[in-house]
Length: 124
Image 1 (spheres, rainbow, N blue to C red):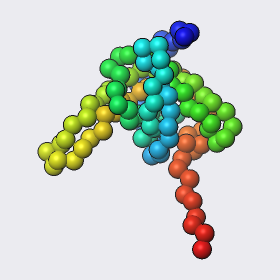
Image 2 (cartoon, one colour):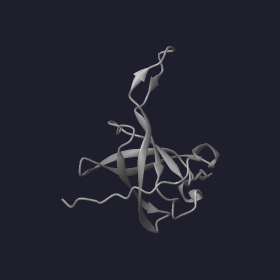
Image 3 (tube, rainbow, N blue to C red):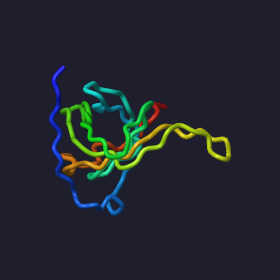
Image 4 (cartoon, rainbow, N blue to C red):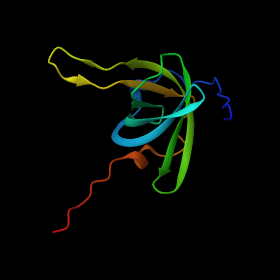
């Protein structure tokens, strides 16, 4: 398996001002030289929140593969994990899924609206 070289360039710390959209889209991320599956919970042009079974630790670098964006192309972006949460039950006994937040090294090369949920109309 080939080893992916990750860059270390970072965007300015401006995560909170970026517009985020809620979505649910499958993706792959690089961990220990192999690809793992996760789901986008929300995304902005500067970062993404991913639900996955084994989140990476803060400070780890990764590559993320978004496949078939609007049935057009695949996109690989690189970033750093800035936070992670493991599975647990909160005080109200609700389950909290394992998740991590990744800040991209460069802005997404496509508009985030391409990740928006599509509402389907039911046939009458």
